[in-house]
Length: 153
Image 1 (tube, helix red, strand yellow):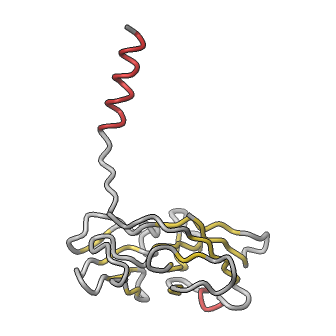
Image 2 (cartoon, rainbow, N blue to C red; image 1 turned 120 degrees about the vertical axis):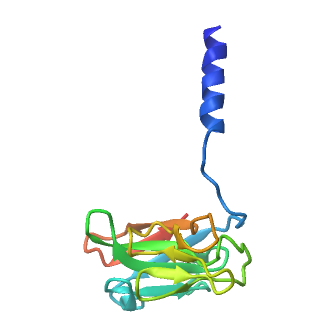
Image 3 (cartoon, rainbow, N blue to C red; image 1 turned 60 degrees about the horizontal axis):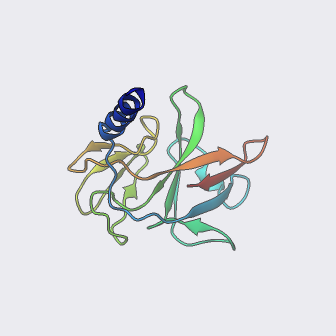
């Protein structure tokens, strides 16, 4: 009886999730960001870079490409965020979001505006029709100096 109740509780917990994910297919991501040389244009709040093709052997750029953004985390520290360039509402490889210098990005097709840096880099829609957030990738420092970063999924 205890086993049955435990299984029922687990089933209910899993089925009550409100998390929704768009139909964007999974695609591997691996990018090395070097703020001293090739990616020094990312230094500074709201600076961003769209990477749609591998720049070195071994790099992977996701489904539509990767958007890397310098933003502010929830503690007020400068950090980096990364997202797939594909609009999750449209879910088409050729429809990509367009970032701006205000910490948001907009889909040219559906008009949805997404948070990419201004509000903690969540990727959540802030205006428009989309109910899905941007696909977010993990960005972590790869050096003690904070000048080298890795983007992965």
